Amino acid sequence: MSAEVLKVGVALRVLEAVAEFPDFLALELSRRTGVRPGTVSIRLAALAEAGLITRTRRSGLILNRITPAGVEALAAARQPASPALPPESKPAGPGRQRAARAEVAIRSTSLSKEEAL
Image (cartoon, rainbow, N blue to C red; front, side):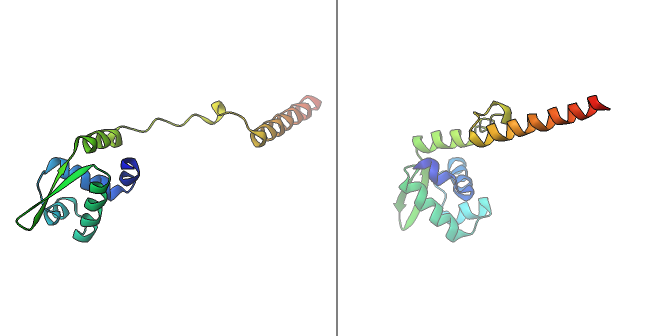
């Protein structure tokens, strides 16, 4: 579920801010991230539900801290995605096979015409 939460780019920015500024209130995190306070609060609740942060109430204030699971999720989100396979190395399905045969037929027809000249 943590990976699902971080698919929302704002949630990732908020989690990064919580990691950098522990015990900051939602309003201060909003200022640091440039995200509206209401959106920050919603994302903080989702991050807490996913177990990526803890929220502690002190004197009517809610303080936010990243959890070890949040640190792991943040590290995983920061790693570059593995590159996609080039088209020629993808397994050929029926549609790709037909397209490849058509391409071969076109090339051979073009070569035959050139030879006739």
